[in-house]
Image (cartoon, rainbow, N blue to C red):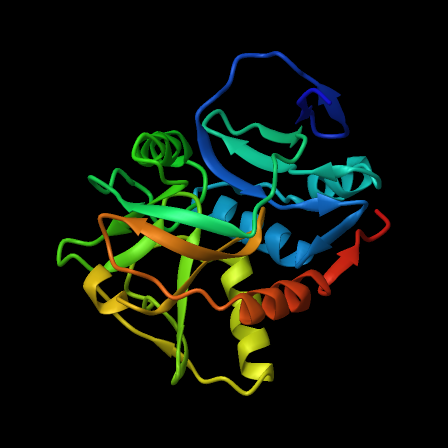
Length: 255
């Protein structure tokens, strides 16, 4: 399947496949598997909140309803909705890439983000950071703050388990408010685990179960960190959490 691109003209989505790409103010994406999505409404809500933060004043209800109506109900897809720098609202219908249960990490050489709390503007820079990590044999890069503490991944969020429960970087670690992490936090709490916001350097994660979470792959186990800490892998926990996460996928609503 080729990537299809549609632009909202105020009343309908018009096919603009092949038109030049435009820098983004906001983007949001999610895995769509045979018409089912985990936390679909949360993705729409985050997009709307980010668009408002970026200065969009017109309502989004009709556009988002049209998006829901236009999404295919079969196939494994990775759609994205955009607000461009020209104020245009767009929908990309893209095939999902190959999905994985594990990931290899490498430490990022820098933090290139200019809008760390908004998904969209930094996508090109973050993709470049991931590509740099791939030259080291990794799948994704780990962004550290000025104190050398874990903040985020270039295309995924990082959480870790210890005997004390689930941990993730604190709110003041500037990053996109991850829908998938919010879902996993709720699953952990429902499973009786404590959930703590904790600063950690790579060295602090030596021997820890580290997981990468995003809307495309769901939950992946970090099996190694290039020139970083040795990590523990718990295959039983990974399988359980992936199953719990996947069970949350719901049919798209009728538009």
